[in-house]
Length: 380
Image (cartoon, rainbow, N blue to C red):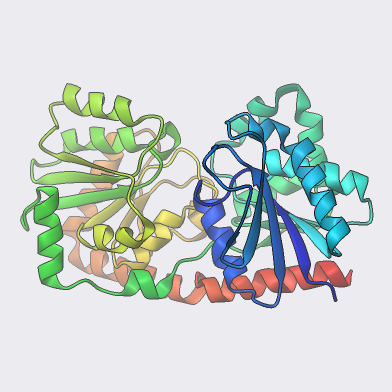
């Protein structure tokens, strides 16, 4: 059996989000496979070709943001050249985006090729419909041409069916590096981190780790402080297009002493950042799944989230977390107060969340599930 796979993605390391991290976590755990990943170059300082983990990355374009629009042409040309050098078992599209269009064109040119489509989309689905505009019929063709669909949540699996996929999508969630996030920091280290961020042990620290964009509801978390006692503080890890707006909001609300922006932090720093806090909050307006929630669970934090997208796959209200309402800062405050005042509930949610992550969200188990799906695709 030919275990050589060409992956089409819009970007790859070091330009990463949850989807790219998930792809690396999975492919690193499949040593018996060969992976070539074709993506847009985007930045002029990035190499045209390099080895990252178990993937050989091939970047196409001229080093600008417009490279993603050229991917269905330049990316397909690069993939066809790869096919001349070695046999390709199947192709794999990381999301139904620019890489998905490239995978579709390749599959049209090589009609016997099997195509696996992975859905990791986290923005509102209306966003994708608006972005493709008059090319919506071609966007649907990605789903219709796919031979198999891997969705990270039931929400995205339903989307695949609505978009025209004829089979049954397989739901395999993203995972967590269990060893990394469950490794507890010492009490002294926790105190050191809190003091470094400007917090005391008497403060109740609400942490969020996400892209600073509207869909992640960071503005609502900041506004929630107006409904909470003054010892409640917010710690924000991440960067994004709304960073300046959020800083202005903090100034306008007079919350400068209660909100700390950490900016972009490495994945290795996240366990310590999470464990230095008391409650994880992400009031998402949309979510494909929400890896940050799972990482917070593994770190031993109770979580507050909204019942949108793929979040209900793992968040059970009062069991593995507490729901708040989207676009409702007061609802966030009430959820936080409930968690911090009901100790038995607080402790049970932490235990249940940790048990759930260990049982269902290990990258080892997830990689095994994806390998089985790839094997079924090749055997078919």
